[in-house]
Length: 326
Image (cartoon, rainbow, N blue to C red):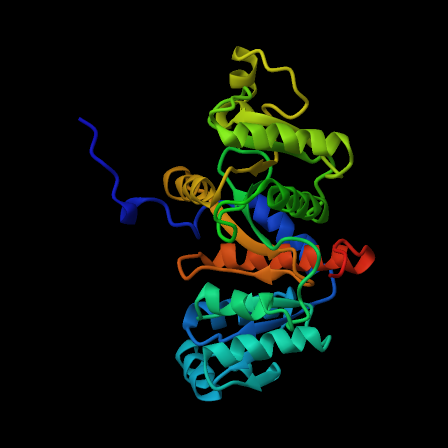
């Protein structure tokens, strides 16, 4: 009889190898430090991550929040944040607004979520007068380090767009492709994922998948090979694709998975995390700067990887204007 393994008995995320993330972090450390406005870093996880990323040379944080709260958390950590610029804010909403203002003024090149709700930060980002909007739809990407999978796997969108339209999926796909290039992926392969690998009018996501592939044929989506609809198994497993007799340059080797909706993406990412032991760095794209959108449940290495991903994307933006202004 097999005895179930309790979560507390599984190997700690900090004791596992993270070769894919280690490579991303090493590459980002060679870049100039990314100036990041950290909105309301008022708990140990968010302030500690910002200070550690700074110590590693990944970011130059600007700590935006109530000075008393930041000071108390720093004292609890035994850390000294005095080497970093601080901008006083009254509360979390004010911190989000002031962090966005720093970006608008050109004093920061990225945003980082602290101990405030995602909606608070994103509401400040998407305001018409924020100065951060572009012509591109804002979307979220998980950059996943899946044990046994050779390369990082991008899953999008699992956190921002609930039920995206075809036009919104076009932007979601293009954002992910731009990210893959920024991370150094030489040949970007995008699988538009559904429950099946054939077009079926009764399954709307298969129609969107077919349309997105045709949009790529017409250069409405650029920089990658696209195929879809593909079921998850034949998107990432050669054997499954072979059994289904799918002939495709993407099937079995996709490095981006575009999901039908937020629910599917969220469940996929959390399944990989909690059942397959994957780590999930998080970033929001489509605004004028990358947004590091970490979770309270993220491990130390995941938070650092999220900072590294943002640094690499910002470096790509410096050399090529990826996003047209509104």
